Length: 257
Length: 224
Image (cartoon, rainbow over all chains, first blue to last red; front, top):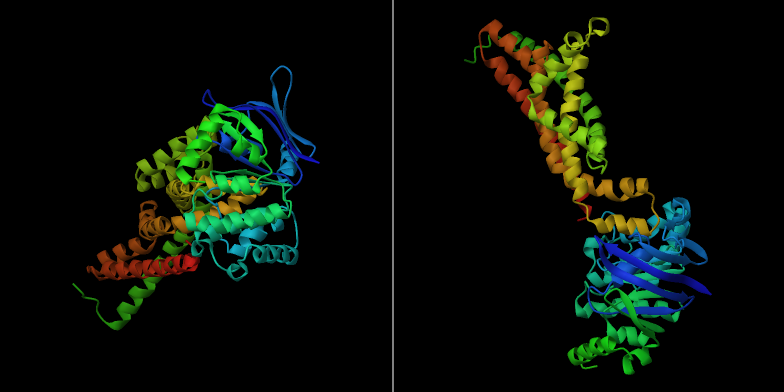
């Protein structure tokens, strides 16, 4: 089943095109890693897909609902605010800088949206939150506040917070880029576990070995365009495009992997 | 200098000043009651991208912060009578005029404090709330405002302390608040003692204000 369909998506900032004519699809249960050099438009693409940025051209369909479409005369039309709010419930997002709510405890961070947006009861939201905290190994931190957590713990809570809304697809915007190398492992492990449970995910990342091991498909972006797309073994062992080759060669040289 | 006569006289002075202080406290509490919410509305309007909303509010803030409060008191009291055409003339009660002038003036200061606080909240907080599906109102009242309040408590406490002392300005409209009572009594008994005792009253009130804000800050120190 198709969860996300993107057609000819373009986005400019002040006349500079950051994402150019991008098209791809994601099916249910798929893990897609988006890689590419800094400034290649990966994060902007992600932000367009979860409505943090408005696109200039293209069509985005989420779980069968049209979020935005472009008519033949180039007119971009978003769905009504009410419908966008509904579509948003299909989408989860994990930020590079966690963006936890500092005035809420870990438990409140996770229960707030289920309570106020999904309309669950306190008891229901608590059960979900505690279950998720178990899963990310932070049961004992339920009553802690974000400032008491390490970066890795914060990001795991942020993942639990997104998962509590039971999204159809979870977006990650460089989830380990703000972390010390020794803390990235614990976050990647949580994402790996989600992958093994067939959570649909789109991960913008600089962690090449993670992308290679966990993703079902790799999208390589450069200068706002999708340059190459394919299974990890194909992209990593026999990339067809010159730019992909150069990018991966730099990476191999630096990491020795 | 401390010629205060006998104990009866001193008791009389205290009760006079106490009555004056009650009027000062009324001005203090009513001004807070109106100016704190009004300041928030002004701050939100001031941050609006619409020029026709933020422009007039910028001018309002400039005037309220840029002219003496004592002049604003006089203006609010006299303008409805002297500046309107004859058929529309009216006079506000002194006390009402004082509360209006104080509320508008303090709202302007609070608005800028709120604005500073709101603008200091990282954009990521809004984005995290948006992707979780919170409405704009939920985002503001549940996520942003609580964090703003923690950040603005110190500058707000400054203004509140100033308000206690500024309440003395309403005497320009002939309202018998603490300072005016003390001054009159001072002239009558030809001694500065009433003024010094009034000073102790102000100090006591602001000691209470300081304690209240300390408690509030402590309460909000459970997170960073």
